[in-house]
Length: 512
Image 1: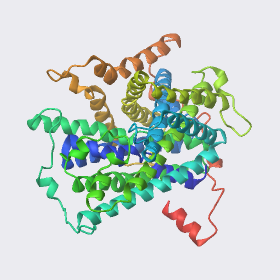
Image 2: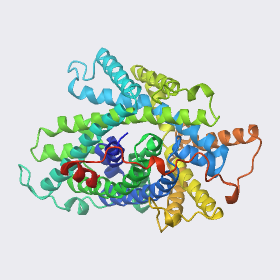
Image 3: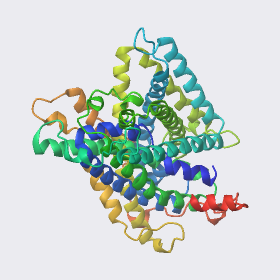
Image 4: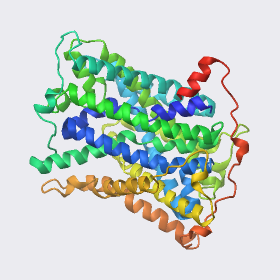
């Protein structure tokens, strides 16, 4: 991949249904102020995690990304557990993204006679999307980068347009010339109570939105999977990590602020929304009421590209995870087989097989199972983020023990470390432990919800413990025992193969 590919993926890689559609659910659960605080907090956690990951990536831009770092600098069993957990959570989420994209296409194809998408049409949509998603990855990383570059541009233009149009409507610039301002922060209020009433409900509503916000950011760590396949990796990783702060600030924080200004949290259309298409978007609700009728189809097209992009990048990252595990002897060796151009053909083919689970959505009973399986992947994001930050602390200890002065790195160094890492670890721990809090509220116990919320914790311990036992029960290494040198690319990879030659090219390079 070239610089522009990585930078655009970093800038808009995780923009998707979590912001375009899920922001409505965030407002319902916690109100505009609660949602804004939740998104700011989770944004700070993601920033802390990326600061930790980027420094390790710039030091060692190698295949396997954060899974390799965990195995090398934390513990071999930690890398094994993290790698397989991330792989299974990734392949299980693949069919969910394909099904979501198929349903979104149905926005333009609902049969009035049955008030639903015709079954034969849904099969065709799933088939076409699955084939296209697979082919993009089989054509190689360059095609994947180009596809994600285009999707990123679409998503950036969409969110910029929605923020600007939302601000215009809020200030009275819409066809109805009705100025909204911050009136919904006063009536019905800045905070909503969920799932119980009163002050406790306002706190739990905010915490629920904390989870929703974190799900919106999920996947940003997948940048590490591409660091070994990008030109001039250290310079490009540094720029991508620095772009993240501005993406969080503008796209997510400004986006959720505008949403909270446009629609009240007790709006009947938000409360009754199924979340499947453009009608679920608070932007659509606000713009329709302001007399702007063309937006639903435009937003739906943008959300469709987001859902497909999520499936495309999910297949890419899971195939590289499996390939990285095989390289280190933690998966069958056959998954390390590549074509002449470096494409991990066996790992990619095996991961692609799980897309066929998309057809489970055609059965009502299987749809429940599909949703249940996809929900299992949610908390894996937080376990991953926390493990990345813990790995960084061991990386830091290794540098200190070997006399490596991190501050002298010309690519990436954060003088506030290790505090960003500690901050991210703390909140990841809180989310993992308390994400299933609702089942402990009196009268709200549900065994399946409890299972979904906490099953990833024993899975991680089983994977770690099983590998630890069969791999010789190795202790956690001291800082002086960590491998800080072998198989790490030197300055020979830090070469700009496509320097800009025109004024526009130089401006674009500076911008990204």
